[in-house]
Image 1 (cartoon, one colour):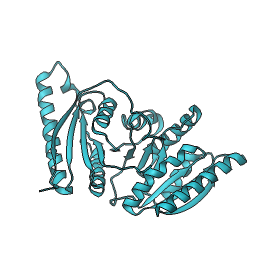
Image 2 (cartoon, helix red, strand yellow):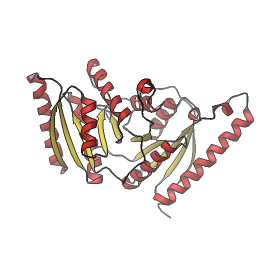
Image 3 (tube, helix red, strand yellow):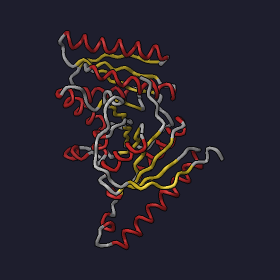
Image 4 (cartoon, helix red, strand yellow):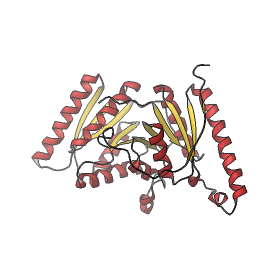
Amino acid sequence: MKVEIKRILVPTDFSETSNYAVTKACRMASRLSAKLYIIHVLESSPYKLVQSDENPKEKVVYQKNIMDRLEKLSTSISEEYNIEVSTLIGEAKVTDAIEEAIRDNKIDLIVMGTSGASGMREFLIGSNAQRIVNLASCPVITFRVPPGEMGFKTIVLPVEGWNSSIEKLDYVTEIAKLYNSQVHLLGIIESRKKADMRQVLVLLNEAEKYLKEAGISFLRKIIASDQVAKETLAYAEEIKADLIMVMTEHESKLQTALAGIVAKHIANHSEIPVMSIKPAMYHTEKVSIKPNPVHYRNEHSNINE
C-alpha cells in the first residue's frame, strides 16, 4: 500500500535537542512538500511552577511568551524553507496532547529528539519520547545527535522472523525514492531451527522482490544471532547508515513483547536516527483518548508569495 507523508509534527520544548528535531523536520517537509506542525506542550516546560493556578498572572505571562516564541519560529521557518507551518500549544499531558494533535491534523509522521538512555534511565528514555513512540498512531523518527546532511542515503532494514517485519517496506520505499537511498536488508536468524531460518529467507526474498519492482537500490546480508538490537546497531554503524527502520510491536503477545524490547533498545542507544513503525499502522484505528485542549496558532506560508 502506497503511503504519503504530507503532514509532519515536531514537538519542541526549545531545548538544543528539540531544535535539532525542528531542523530535521523542516528539511523533510521541504523535500516532501509537506505541511509542518510545531507543538509545544506546557507540561513539558522546565518552568512548570509558573503554570500553577496559584500564580495565574505568571501563567498568563509565560503562555504569552511561548506563543510569541512559536510565532517567531514559524515565521522564520516559512521564510527559510518555503513551507507551510502551523503552531500548536497543548495543556494536557504530553502524550495525550500529541496524540490529539495527530488525530485532529491527520499527522503522517512525527520527528523528535531524545537524549537517549543508559542504566536505570532506560526506563525513562528521553522522558516522554518512548511513550510517544509506543502510543503514537503514526510513524516516529527519533534521534539524539545534531542532524547531518539532509536526507537518508543509507537505510538499514532489519528483517526478523516475524511476518509483520516486512510491513516496513511501504515506508522504506517512500523514503528511498525521495532521497535516492540504498537499502540494506539485514536478515537476522535468531535460532538454528530450520523453520526459523526458512522464515527469514522467505521474508528477505519478498523484500528483495518488492524493492526491485520499486526500482530501489539494495544490498542483502544475513547474520545468525539472538542479539537483534545489538547486531542491528553494529551493522548500521559499520556501514555509516543514517536511518534504521524498526517495528514497535507485532501481532501476537509474545512477538509484541520481543519486538517492543528490540525497538526500545535500538531507539535508546542508536546514534543514528530511528524510524519506528507499527505493523499495519494504516489499517488500525487510532488510539482513543479523552479530549484535551490544544490551541492552534496562525499558519504561516510564503509558498504563493
